[in-house]
Image (cartoon, rainbow, N blue to C red):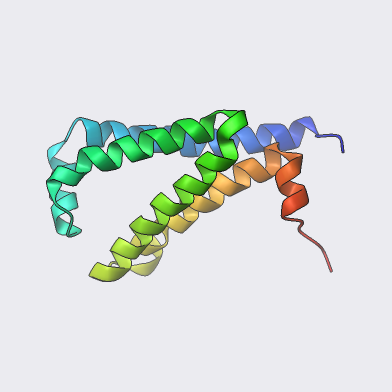
Length: 129
């Protein structure tokens, strides 16, 4: 099946948005900014976990960014974002702005792959009927 340029551009656009957001997030974690440490404590995590989370996010994002390993990266990012969702559910965060934010990002992760890779579309066919 021929991949259209429009679908490829749409896929990479979604993917780049996610990648840039996650790079910003992991950079803030690596810098151990006060807002990151405060928020981490408010979420019930020890501040010592920030660097570990940043490393996990860096590895997952890097795997997602490279086409050969993008599916593995998407799977790892889905797990990471699922942990964020669970954390927000546990502390009673607002649903649409906090709890589901990880789900929104995961949709961008998989949507980017869906549009840029015909093999993903073959695995997850969307049907009109």
